[in-house]
Image 1 (cartoon, rainbow, N blue to C red):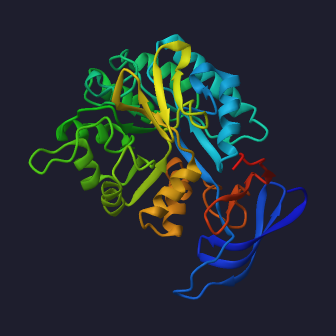
Image 2: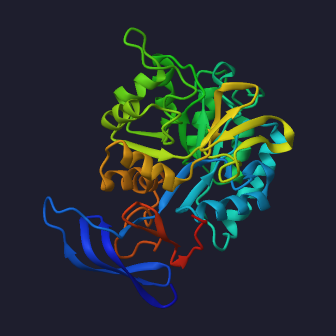
Image 3: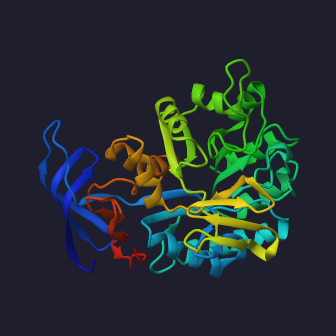
Length: 378
């Protein structure tokens, strides 16, 4: 949107729905003009919403951020075309040299943002400090907690979120180091007990990684991490592909956790044709079928997902969650969790990072900081 321009439709503002238009100048929203919908009045298409924010995404369009800067640039372009305006490219457990290649590449993209791409807000470090007993599809090369290595990474690279199993040797030390640098540390790939979880949150943990997946479950006689999250959690991420978590269980989490938010956990094969694909360096083969991605060697193990955030949005609507709440789950809550003060809402002064959806919740337009993004093919 060059100069002053506007978008018209049903606008989800911080104060509710408005029928009118959003005025944009440069990269910022400057005004919202229109009429507020009356109580009980339903918005009609097109819907103008805060752009999607994905805090857990490994890849897409054939690229994985573990492959370095150019791969990260390709993945942020892919996800922008599907409605994501900001993200945390997410590592996975790998040898230290590969992890550091990824950290350097993501940092380079953050420092020189990609034209036609989602804004990189920083890094989600998932692994290597996780439990060998809850690897999921992560590589079988986890490390014990290493506060010296963590200090080196956290002081050099913009790690905004990290997944750590607090019960592993040195895990609490890693949590404390990350907290010192303002990182949101999440419990994930973990078998932590209630006592270990309490210690983790006292040390600085703030949330939960892909709730229900790669953690101890809800059991009415024995507490697990998922039960702890639903009892005490304020923030938690959940893979919103309706495959990692059953829709009824998703609704239970939505009712229990005040700031549950959606992630894709998308991997490189998101957007590719169905079939078998080799992961980075040919280390593993995954099988993609629609948006479902599993390990060929272990078909019951999901290896991330093949969804984008527009898929997540529609999935959440399909299980009966209201549009305005789904918008919070796919944008606002993620911004609040990171403490980003000018994203995740449509209000004057905020970044013009916006999506427009039609009556079938298909993307009609995506704008990242006022820049129109070429959409993915329907």
